Length: 90
View 1 (cartoon, rainbow, N blue to C red):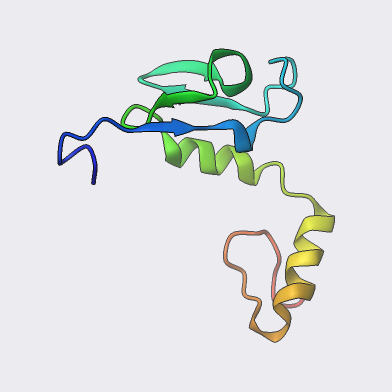
View 2: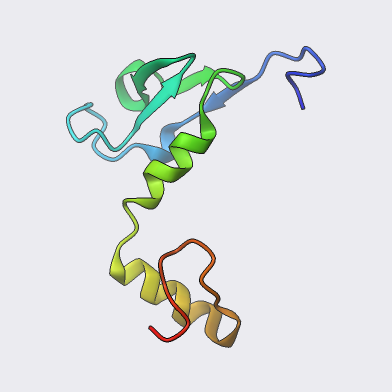
């Protein structure tokens, strides 16, 4: 929305950082068709250039079985297979 209105937008990608040194690769993202690491190249980036779809998909790879179990326990009977990797019978 801010792009359409011509409003400069800076986003902080530090929530995706793991070790803060660039060695683990957990905070890798694409910014303006260039690979960047939030911990060493940022964490602030032009929000109009960040590939958020890719970043979201990459972060889903790091979800653990424990995290999925906690989500299912927290959501109880309302938990559905909505992207966390749990099935209704798991």
